[in-house]
Structures are given as C-alpha cells and as structure tokens.
Image 1 (tube, rainbow, N blue to C red):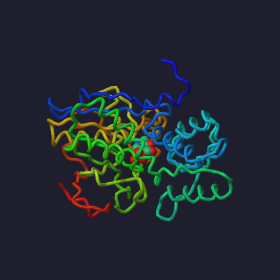
Image 2: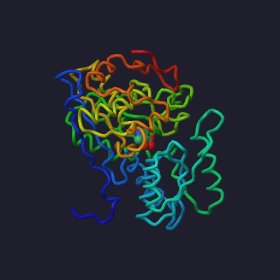
Image 3: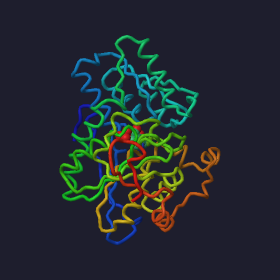
Length: 352
Ligand SMILES: Cc1ncc(COP(=O)(O)O)c(C=O)c1O
C-alpha cells in the first residue's frame, strides 16, 4: 500500500481480543488499539478533523500558527499535522507531560511552553489555558483548535471511529471508554447507540476528575479526566460511570504487559480494568474498550519502578497477575454507578 503522506495512515486501528485476563470462559473483551494511529493516539482523529474543518471554513490559513493546551497526545497529533501541512505549532503543556511526548513533538518542530505552576485548586489545565489565551492575543492569525469546546472533536469519532467499530462487530453489548474532553466517548457513543440500540456505554474517569461534575482533586493518570465539565462531553449516551484510582490503572497496565504482552498507556489500563469489572458482573456480554494510546509513551515514567518510587508509588504495591486483577475487578475501589437523570452533575450518578 502506497500513501502520499503520513496523515493518510490515520484510522483503521486494530482490535485485539483479550485471551487470558478474563473473569469467565464466556467473557469477550476486545481492545481497539488507537496507539496505531500515525502520532500514536486516539487524538489523531480529532486533531486531523478539527484542522481540516478549520481549513475548509477559512479559519486556518496556510502558514498560520496553531496554539493549543494539551496534556500530550493532542499535542503530538498537532505537531505531526504542523510538520506535514506547514503550520507553526505551539503547545502549552505542564510538568505531568511525559518526556517522550515532549521529544516527539519537538522533533517534529513544535514549540513547547511548559506551565510550571498549577492554579490555586491544584489544576495545571486552567493555568495552561491562561497561557494559551495570552499567546493567541499576541500572535496574529493564530488558530486554537480548542479540543474541549470544538464539536469537530466528537464528530470525528462519530464519523470514523464508530464506523470502524460497526465494520468489525456484527453485535456488541457494551462500550467502556475513557473521558478526557469526552470526544471519543460522545462521538462513538452517539453513533453506536443508533446502530446497536441496546448498547451499554460505560464512562471511565479518574477519581478526582471533575469532568462529570465531581469536585476536582489531583490524580496521576494522564490523558483521562478533566478539571471541569468539557463542552465536548455529551452524557446523553452514557449509562454508567466507573471512577478509577491511579493504582488500579497502573496495576492493570502491569498485568496486561505480563499476561497478554500488551503495553497499554495509563488510561488504557484504566479502561481495561473497568471492562474487567463490567465483565465480572456481565460474563456473557461482549465488551469493547478503546485503548487511547500505547505504553511506549510511559516507559520512562509509570513503567519505571524508580520513577514511580520518586512519585511516592511503591511498584511492589501494584498487582501483576491475572488472579490479582480479577480479585480487584470484583471489588473495585469505587463501585460503578448508573446515570439516572441529566444534566451532567455528580447527583446524576446513583450506585448500581
Ligand atoms: C491517553 C489518553 N487517554 C484518554 C484520553 C481522553 O480522550 P477524549 O479527549 O476523547 O475524551 C486522552 C485525550 O487526550 C488521552 O490522550
């Protein structure tokens, strides 16, 4: 297959069936590996769609500057798009962004601005936004994709990610997806609910994230969660929520590496753990998770025992075996809750 440029490698990501880490011989858990996109994550789809729609509307002109706040993967995607399409790209990141993400983006020519201080609530995200606003005011003709407010973010997943899932699955019972901007859960959730009317959609968020209206408190897992409710999150198609502790996500990454040979990113660990908890309660159902990126983004951090220790996490406290994962999946730290009414706020979630 011959391609004209690297962005054409977008999409068509593989789906892996989990073989060993299953609660029951009848269980079917599938992992759609978004890390196979050209810049290595689920955000590539949203970034390409947002940029191409902005070009089409005339909001983004040749040679202009793209400025965005990003925890990493969206920035990698923009850096790649900038290099292919000839845009200057400025990424505003914070100290949680991994060194591999930063080297990737700067190797492609993106400029990096690091916000070193969180705001008074401990949120780096809002401090990053302040810096983005300053840069936009300073650089004429600059464009901000604004991933948390841009409807082209969820739309990219409704148009493309969902269609790939429909092509791969004649039948599907449950979708277990991470929430960050809400882009991929809102887009795929809405499109797949039309196709599979009885599909159960479970959101996976970090304990401490405010994306679904809970009070914000700092957490470690990257990519997942938010410090406010993003515009791009639509809870209409979400049936239940599983809040994950950092230790559950990081442990699941270790288990999947040891038991399945699969190096998941941190949020991938979170969704696979949530899928295992779901499958424990619904052993005959087919469950699909989207692994937003790959473990390669975290080799020098959460896969590194010394780095973890410096962060206050003892690697010995993480579980590594199928048996431990199953035991924890039967009794997760925060039992999943069902959504009983709109709008998005903590009171919309009741214990199941
Ligand atoms: C690693 C990772 N996981 C999960 C997410 C959440 O995806 P979304 O923004 O579509 O909700 C992101 C988004 O940046 C991510 O990079």
